Figure (cartoon, rainbow, N blue to C red):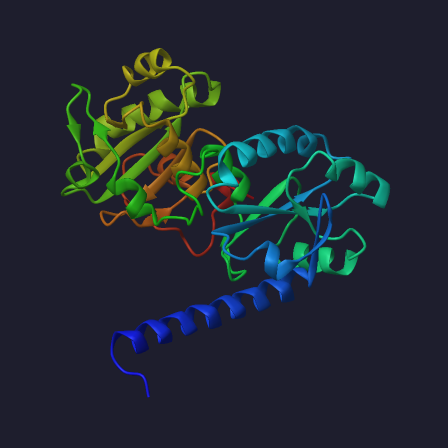
Length: 323
């Protein structure tokens, strides 16, 4: 019987080997025993061993947005992402094997064999893919990290945050630099201290609906909402800093420092903001209360119901909201 440090190292190595075998089996079950490479068929377990993340790339030759995104993804993959441990597996929605083969020639990664249509359909269903191009990021055991892989990689094409595990909203905001009207910098905890609610205001100078809503919100904030414990933080989607400065001059609240472009987009993605103006209401612990803050505040500009918890039954007189 072996005892001491040699036994410990041996046991640790055995555990690693067992874990790798289990992960390889899980990936093979998900993607099949073989994948297609430029040089022919390869064993799934061998092709994906040691990868930090696997991106399932749902795409098709006939899809114009796909054909626009594929060269970008290929460039990022070859320059940085491959060497940092990402493997991509193309899951084709092409209409014929010929189209698949032609499109796959443009790709420097692996593919699910086109003939395995049943598995392709199963993967689309499993990950809720309703549109392409779509990237689903998996860990080395085939477990989902994020279904928003396209946005994650587009915002981080060099892979600094690979494997792009989504952070909690509070974690994202903890690193935020907030500025006031005088340029004084503060952390998020100072910004929300003693506040009953915080509104993240996604807006931009170039957006006509935003420029219509901002003066209204500013008036409500100054006359009632600020006194009742609401803090607003402007999250700019302006394209230039000068536009941000010009627009922020009209606002009486705080702002996310303009230099953190990545965080402004990450916050939008994390909160499902796909159009502006958008107002997301948080509590003092930075937990989401209401993603339809614009509608809530518009219906209650004096803040009688602050912090505007969603009502069980929506009053359609206030508008359809996100319907």
